[in-house]
Image (cartoon, rainbow, N blue to C red; front, top):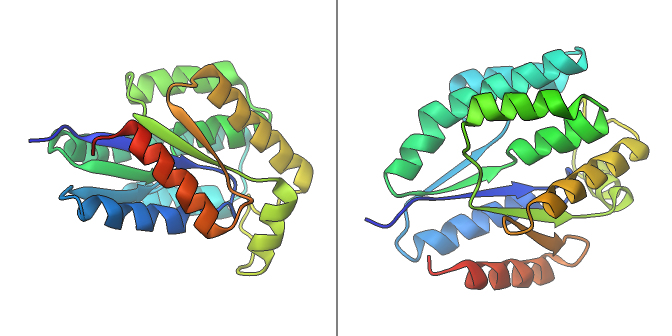
Amino acid sequence: MRAGRFLSFEGIDGAGKSSHIEWLAGWLRARGREVLVTREPGGTELAERLRELVLHQGMDALTEALLVFAARRDHLVTRIEPALAAGAVVLCDRFTDATFAYQGAGRGFDLGVLATLESWVQQGRQPDLTVWFDLPPAVAAARRAAVRAPDRFESQDEAFFERVRAGYARRAEADPGRFAILDAAATPEAVRVQLEAVLESRGPW
């Protein structure tokens, strides 16, 4: 049995993560891999209920962080870890880097508290590869406005998303071996070429 692999896709809303995750799932299945496509917050019945609260219910930053990590714990225990143990490739739309980017950099919440929660909840588990779809916030905002009404995060101003982007950059700088950075401002076709190059460099699959 081939070993399980854990990939996370990160970036601000509008960067194109979701469509590329679906493409990658098909790419991997064509190579005979079992694939779990999931998301955070979410991925389980409990975590999806917590996601609705986080996205739509007003709360302070600590409450928000606790709910996100509670959802992550349930997700890890009930879906991610069993899938990896069974040899699947797990493709997750956001993981802990998003918490440090949104709650930490965006909201200005204590990074030390987030690091403690990360340690407690994940017990060392990190993605094998994190693909960051880097995109200027103004471009992302224009893309989002064209397709949907904003949730509690998407309605934040451009300065918030500049902080989020900087938060992702700090996470990538701190763990460059795990991160692959894509220019998400390019056309979808050009982004896919970048993604394929990353996959080829991190294979075999």
